[in-house]
Length: 441
Ligand SMILES: *Cc1c(COP(=O)(O)O)cnc(C)c1O
Image (cartoon, rainbow, N blue to C red; front, side, top):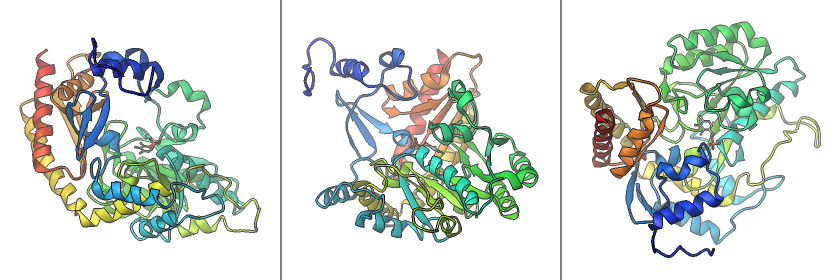
């Protein structure tokens, strides 16, 4: 077998690529024995908000490549930023040394994040940013001689990534129950599906504050569990309880950050200023693997002490602060203003909300619709278990050229932030057709 494309003889190009894929690639969150049967798309290239597969078929990317793409694919300005940085340097270590591209990015991000006088500890994935946040929160206390704050409060339905620390603060489910023996125990308040979640969280913070290192939340939207949403006031009350009981607040904005909910960060709508914030996914516009843990001045200062002392944060990743990713992330941040991305998110979100209300009106199979900005979950109510409606509706949409991926029986809509009015209409029209096809079957 060679690197070249397989010859197009008997099987289609697509089938040949799927066979090559399944022979050597292990796909995450995917049962590989069924992979080839589930009609995966094999992307060869992309243009704007469309993906193009190996047979030249085009798909509107209505999940933003699993929530990372913000402005589209092959954005000329981002492509140029990557090329220009390549002519300087692609990567150098941040452990003990600096890089011009990373410094410029952190300087540009600093006034934009809702964290006071921030420092940025870079990583490559959201889960690593959460892992860093958990360790920082823990050591923040031990550095001050306080060894009794060893617990975390997290929410039901929470998802914070797939490393052992992040699945510990994450709720059960998502297929992770097998790892229960490895999880460290956390204090658990309800998730956003419970209207009383914040009351319980506030009460738990009051009762356990003295032993809590931090409270971990996804502000406004719990995405992975199926787009559970809450009100800004509820989040604000929990942040106030943290302040009152001197517990650190970690805001995981890996999914909600970079414009998804209509503001640059969801914390801004909630009027909270977390002590620690995790960002990832949209940080480079979906181009390159980069995440960061953002620490307030107070948190950061607790780590200052004699050289080589135990005050140091002994944590770092090989590709932390990658220069290529930083250059793209910096250009991306500036494009938010230049392209007036946030006003478009708010306009398209309002349009989507109206269109989905219309879709649900004469389709009793549609249960709840949950939305914050351009993060949407359309919950289906199948008449019986095991019908795999979510999966089948998304497959029917893909056959019509709109790429969707469900979370169980919740169909997720995550349009790219620069989507046009026509594209939003097309997504809703195709979703309606897909629902009708599956419900009629
Ligand atoms: C996706 C996600 C993560 C994990 O990020 P990865 O880059 O996939 O490791 C963490 N928290 C939230 C809220 C997420 O949506």
